[in-house]
Image (cartoon, rainbow, N blue to C red; front, side, top):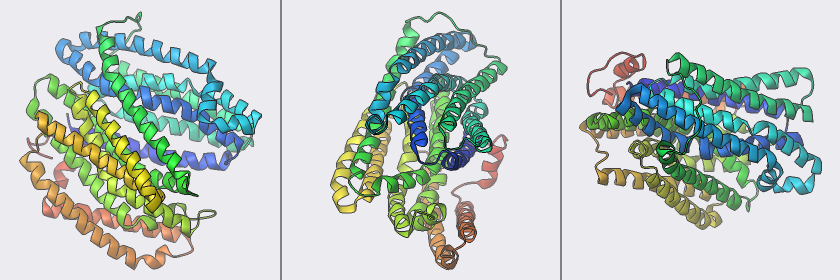
Length: 526
C-alpha cells in the first residue's frame, strides 16, 4: 500500500467536494435566500446529517474497519464476506428502524432542534416537518455508504469512496440549476425539489459504491439479521464512537450558546469555521481515512515495524500540509476574510472580528489534524474507549476555558478555548500511545519535523513581507484585483515553502511525486 498516494486520492476528492460545496451554498443563497423556506430546508437537512455524524460515519468506520481487516487476515475473503454480510444485515435493520421512528416522530425532532419554528409560524413548522420526512432517509443511504466505503478502503481502494461526497454536491447543484431555470426560486416548491434532490443523491451515492464493491469481486448478499458475536463486538466498539461524536456536538452547541450573548459572535465564529475547516477536512480527514485500514491490516499481520513506519509518515504528511496553512491563518487572516466575505452587509468591522477568530482557530489547526492522525492508532487496535474519554476531557477544557475567556475576549475566547482543548487532546493521545509502546518516532521523522517547522516559519516571514507589498491591491475597490492578490500571495507562499522543504531536506519532492503517481519507492522513504 502507498499511504501518500491514497492520501492524495482522498484529499483531492475531498477538496473537490469542498469547492463544489461552496458553489452549492452560493446557489442555495441565490435561489432559496434566507427566508422561511431556506430555514426549513437547513433544519430538514441538518437532522439526518446530525445522526449521520453520530452513527453512520466516524463511529461505524472506527469499529468496522479493524474488525473487517481482522476477518480478512484470519480467514481470507470468504470469512470477510460472511462477516460483512452479517454486519450489513444488522446495520440496515437498525437504520431502517431509526428512519421509521424518525418519520413517525418528525414533529418532535423538529421541535427539539428548532423550537422557535413552532411558535413563530405554524406554516413554517409544517413545511420543515414535511421536508425533514423527505430528507431523513438520506441517513440510511449514508449508513450504507459508510459500510461500503469501509470495505473498499480495507481493500486499498479509495477513489470511489472518496468520490461519493462529490456526487451529493453535483446532484444538488444540478437540482438548484433546475430550480433557477424553472422560475420556482424562493418558493416552497423549491424546498420540496431540493429535499428530493438530497434523497436522490443518497441513493446515487450508495448505488455507485455498491457497484464499485461488486466490480472488485466482493459481492454481498443480504441475510437474516442475527444477534451474534460479530454484531455484539461491533456494537461494543461503536458505542464509544457515538458517545464521542455526541460530546463533539455538545461542545459545538455550548460554544454557540456562549457566543449568543455577544452581538454577531455566532456569525463571526461560523465564517471563521468555514475557512479553517477546509484544510482540516482535506488533510485531517484524508489522512485518517487512508491511515486506519493500513494500520489495521499491518497490525493484524504482525507487521509492527510497518505500522510504526506508516504512523511516522502520516505524521510527516499531515504537518507538511498543516503547519504552513496554520501560519497563514494566523498571519494574514484579515486579507483572507476580506477577499472571501467583505461585501454587501459584511463590512470591515465584521472582517476584523472574524479575522481574529480565524487566527485563534489557526493556532489549533495542527492539533485538530493531529487528532485525526493519532486516533486511528487506537481504533486499529480495537480501542475506541480511550479516544472517547479524551474527547470528553477536550470538551471539559474547551467549555471551562470558553466561559473564562469570553468576558475578556468575546467570541475570540471561544475560538481560543476550542484550540486549547484540541491541543490537550493531542497531548493525551500522544503520551498514551508512547506510554503503551504503540508509537515511537523514527530517526527520519525526528530529522524532518524541525526542518518542516523551520521552513514554515521562513515561509511566514516571506508571506508577511509580500502581504505588506500587496496591500494596495488588497485595498482596491475591485474584487477581482483583491482576489488575484490573495491567490498570488498563497501561490508564492506554497512555492517558497516547498522550495525550502526541498533545500532543507524536510521532504523529498521527487520521491513524493513518484509515490503519488504510483511508483515503487525504496524502504524508509517518505
